[in-house]
Image (cartoon, rainbow, N blue to C red; front, side):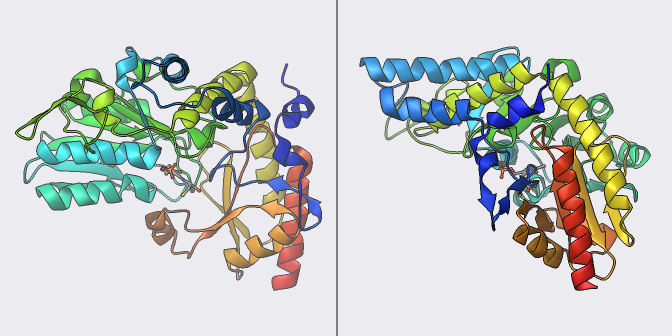
Length: 404
Ligand code: C6P
């Protein structure tokens, strides 16, 4: 049973006030709030079994190693990953993408082509541009339409035997569009190109089965999924990850080191140089359990109701325009009011206790497409309420009155 009142009690931060008003947290696409059980798991690690992992024979080290590896298995199970060695625990989506992009520096040849979409976060653009500069590969872009949907017929025209990689987000952080990644993957595989899907905005709303969608690399951040910052996942098919050079050298990623030559450890350790974010990895596993206990179908149903209500209420405000109007959307509403800068709306609603993000959302090409400086982005989670939508709508109306 999805009971919003019980769920809200799990999140201590939701009790606080901001500027003398109850906090209305609508910046979930930037980072989610954390339930007490996730916070407790971090405190528990540091209070009772803090030690470095994979290194010591002593009891604390073994306890910490066991719990960290259990967390890896939770990630594996959640995403239906075939083998736990295919789960690389990274510092987050950005780190995961850079590992793969760096690995392809040794594989791509001058004149090879890679394809990105027009609605990517900078994290899924810049590392590939750097790769193209290093290798002489050519970056092509899948265009989008004014609803904020990728134009698949144009994508198909870009694909050829020269295409080596396609990288696309599962859900756009600035528009909320859910991209048809199954079709994108299938078409890329027809020309033997590998696909990396950036799941940073998808994994708190959608339960992803990497084997079912047959994706080659899937990346995400724990902090978008009620977990802590500084930890995330790189999933890659074993045979592909084995072909990539490690991104960083250091402790724990080696088999043998001499001054003449170093051989690398097997997966996943080859890509996990140095002491990892141990408490973060453990808490990531706890967050995954927490979300599954609530249930992804329940989360999606509830959030869909919330987004439909918020969209309808906001559209009643004259001059308000929503960017990202696909019918396939998660709970993000990006909007502007004619003649008002998004930053000014964000500042006024903050005075009323409401957290939204304003600006380009690290997705400047989208803003360039719509010819706008940025948007106000309200992003909802399963712990938000219809009453909070009303607070937002009233605050936006007030801001409009003050600014126009
Ligand atoms: N988007 C937002 O407010 P990191 O910072 O590595 O955890 O995630 C980067 C990232 C990559 N891809 C997508 C689709 C994202 O949305 C993000 C993070 C936040 O939209 C912070 S910029």
